[in-house]
Length: 146
Image (cartoon, rainbow, N blue to C red):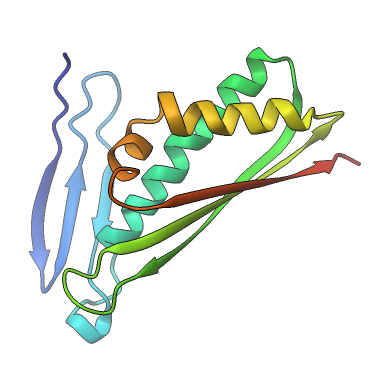
């Protein structure tokens, strides 16, 4: 078992700065803030949106790694995330959609589908934390590189 540490320090208003305390790399700072209508100042990402970003980043790293192992010639890759959020507190996400856009040469659709499936079901810890409580739907598009 490994242990991860982060530190989040209040700056002002509802603005916080988080650092990763990563022993293998430089510390990374993340600015967090609330929406202006909730007293935020627009100085950072909203924590709930950071969760969506973490999910997309985690799955993206898995998918790219798997596609490389499958010798797919990927030249571009992005993940678009949308989520429905409850109106009442605790305002949790009720459904999350991830749309993977893979650009490359002769990309095998089965390889992309399998890479997304493996990330979601086996490799991505963020997805595996979320999926028992929030439905996550995935889809993908393949674009042939020019």
